[in-house]
Length: 546
Image (cartoon, rainbow, N blue to C red):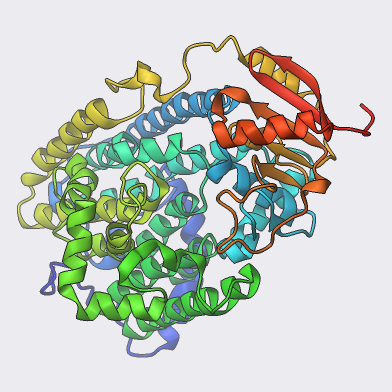
């Protein structure tokens, strides 16, 4: 089977002379895609290797040795089910025990509630939904919100399930490349053992994490040349957040380099247009700040105050870029993301899927952005995961006896890292406070206090109470709206404190300025205390009936 200079399989039989041949192939592939995906769970689809001109059986003779792929899939399904149950329980526990915060669970939950009701201003964030990010996919949760099911726990566990389902395209890709389902299963499961996968689950719902599943499917469909479902998967990826266009641009470039030049360039071009429209038109139009830039250009310090200036400095000032990478310890970041796969991700262009976001992460001036435990790592994680499978597939095509050894290396590294740095019950820090495993005796008082807050009133609350009060038009993080805290871009969209009817406060989390503000509100008679037990305080504006 011929390989190009990047080590990528080149399919000679699939290059059509007539462009209409692609359309006919699309129709045929679309009819088969359900069976192709279901083949990760049930014995439903034909051999995938023939689609790209390489028979998997040529690699290791798995069919000749009677490998039972049905049992391999059953093992995969069982392992994924255990993982989803384990982390789903922990996620629900974290939220129930007030471990979810205003940023980001609070404002994302309010965003879903608002969009489902034709509203758009997030009072938790001080920005309109689309003045923050172009998260069109949040509309998908509107039906759940209408029936009261779009809660932080449900949204976060939909994400947990989505991460578990990422093993399907990974399994399909690995089986396609290696031809042996028993080698594909551990490579797919290594993704769930990766510390970053576990940490983004801990961090709760985020749009870019939800986009990992459709992006992985988009890559798989690009390999099998299922162009109709490739297009659907690309769209399903890019609607989650505007900067996902960077990964789609790289995917389009990879498709073009593999021989589908027209299609790949079209995808890359559409990604550029989507990113430009989102960052130059949509977000500035909604956020109301001065200028025509999204708010997050402020995250890059002396690299510039606009996307153009930042891009220019990145390309023309290597000394400044190097200084930012030293400040963020970019090498350590790369090691944290790549080491759970034994650094086996760098033999394939697929690893480039995560490079644009990885570069932007490590150029930022805030440490949580270049920390592999937060949602910013989503695209680099996709890149190293797919790159790992593709690298092993490439080496296995050259020396098929390498495959079991390389799979063992990945499994060993993944399990070692999950023990040292993960968040599962297998991790050494599992009982260190990552998850609220111990019962907090104050919880019953917090629950009792929040039950006194009506559903339709404007509230200012401390950060850990905000996600429990977000299904309303006005919910602020105290001391907002009296004093600006993590609000808007430059202090715009200020709201009138006179609209606040209730305060819901965990007194242990208030600093001196916040305590002084609270004392003044109570002493002036503006608010009266309704509930005060175990440092949980609920106050109501004077004159409002209870």
